[in-house]
Image (cartoon, rainbow, N blue to C red; front, side, top):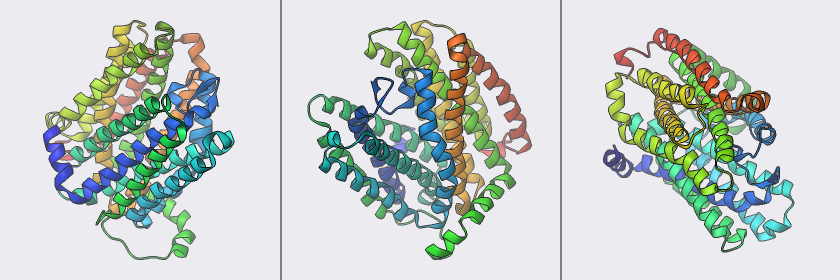
Length: 422
């Protein structure tokens, strides 16, 4: 899979530049958010990562601040992705925030009010969400007849690696130099992503020319049309619903695991990081290497989604309440492996089920599912974590498996469990 993936990356010009745009966006995020995030303080701890929230109260506050606004914006972004030139859109998403970061660093990060810094971080987050949705919509046009599973696997794995690399550079660099030089490097990386976007020849399958004013006047109708198209396409609706359910399990479980690890390994942040991320990283890597082969063995993407999701759910149900180090590693492995395999399969299902004119709006529904999963997970943890502790993780695993059974019925009716669905 690795060799074939690298061959694909370098042999398909438009796909290679599309991946370069995504990787630059996520590497820039790691640098900029790592450099600026420490000035945004929640609950006495620096940072802007909800998964690293120090308590359920802080988690809920951050989830509401970050994800509720995006829920209302996402449908409009979906129309933008479907109706305008995606190359220019990808260029603007990276270029505008590059300019904003440079402006703030010229003024001086420590001289800027925290509210402005928070706004800047929200801009970087929103821009990346736009880049990822536009990338997912454009990916089939850049791949041609090549396997979408391979393309999505490269996108998911590469994006994670580049974002982690950027964050790692920011963490190490911030201990040696001021935040401004790191943020400037991040802005340069964003700028490179903007230039890569302009090198893409085709990011869509062609559409009727239209004016900006006409599309603004029709934006609400376009949103409704997108929802109707997804509703008329059971495969897309089932895939988006599964993504919400899987993201909810991932979010609640990973945060709960972080709370358990924090108490289990007090004072050793490095060991805590290894426990909570190491197993998951191995699971993701194994999923990347075996995705195409497992798709064949599962006899279709629909089956692979259910099998992979079951791995995540069973691991959570069995190991969620076991507060020992080995159980945490194994649990994060199951979550990483199951989530990664299911996610690339779900992306592929949506891309195959819908035409190019509707993919942007479909992936905006993905974005809404992502937002709602975060908020609902935060509410659930707020209501029951203090009373149930790690037992809540196991209970959520059981509930997830019950819901997965219902989704399996939907998959069968939608024809996703037949061999031809591959």
